[in-house]
Image (cartoon, rainbow, N blue to C red; front, side, top):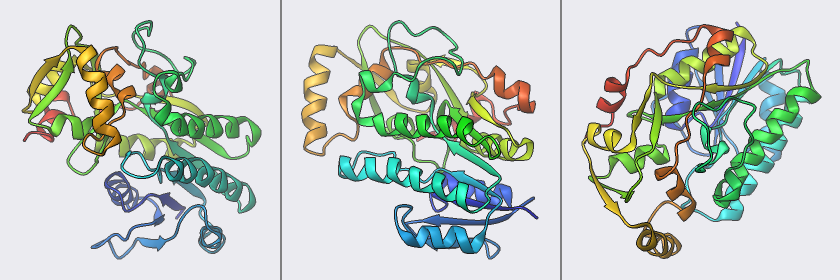
Length: 305
């Protein structure tokens, strides 16, 4: 059996993926947190991607494939630490892949890297520029990670490298930013705006990663869910209530609350409540025949209060 190493294996998405891949692969993983109650067939190493011990894990486990999702995606800690873990950790991982015979690499990026702007076309393809840093500097590290991985594809073509950019991920186990927002009983929105949004179930993301490994995909691929709905519809269907607020009031209040730790999202996230970021998933479907297992109703049901 091929051996797959998952970074960030103890997180919600990592646990789901490990269980999905156990059907066909030998699975191991690394994380800075323990996985209590993990399956006996899964080995978890408690290491930091930036440390020498991580190279020791790669050298001893010798995985044939790596799935990289070991990122800090929240904003609760120090910004410099987040950038160092995400960017330097990814650089270390890419170096180890070239030195220890990794044959396949899947990097789980995000549709957020395109950025939210009024000029965004509907259903952007993978050639659209990654512009999120323009208005949302706090996620420039995720844009850098995506850029590093995309360049790696062409620099080391003998390693089958695939960058996946899923739309908004929802589900019971995954703690995404949009999931936290929709779990609130009252969700603030920007008065006069109701952008179309796409969602995908956490288990469909696992299926997409499994297909990328199975097909040995090489390249960059958007991964989209079963459809798009207006933001206010998503809030209603997940059991919340939308509270429209004027933008001149929202930005300074949210910025101040974020700085003192009373609001979890930087002000750059507000643009995603105003402008659509809809992606085309045609390239991935053409390459893998991917079909979502969960419809929008099931996705929203997994989030109901």
